Figure (cartoon, rainbow, N blue to C red):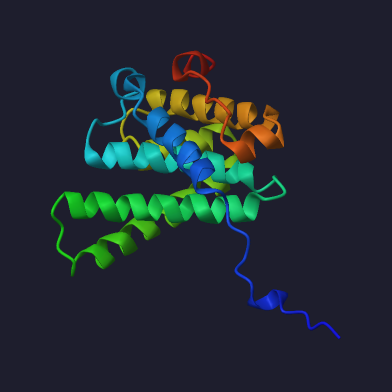
Length: 183
């Protein structure tokens, strides 16, 4: 008789190269100069972090609907955490302070994603308000409306992507310039 030992196996994990590709696309998009030049995102560590979180949220939100989405989402979030940890250490943050900073990053991520998810149920203006508060430091609601239009365009573009493109990390973000013009 064969005994089922499947519960001793490690859960299936996402291919590292795929996660690196998806995360790299998120980081590249969040570094797009147009966000800082034309959409009033502060070109600061915090501004870049908040824009990265917004893009991460958009991708994680879409991955929920992919068959391997749970595995991909967890691997992508873990990669984000590892990247933040590495960045803190590169900036010279002491080993004792890194866990506290990482906790703050986690709280920021979960707080912002909860605010964005709630705002989606209330419409573009609510999303613009949430983005204004979190990304634009509570300033410039007109630019926040453009950023909300961009976020909606990203959601629509991700929704149009087939599961293979999403799971393989081969999708493309829309241009912030074209998407923001839809505001």
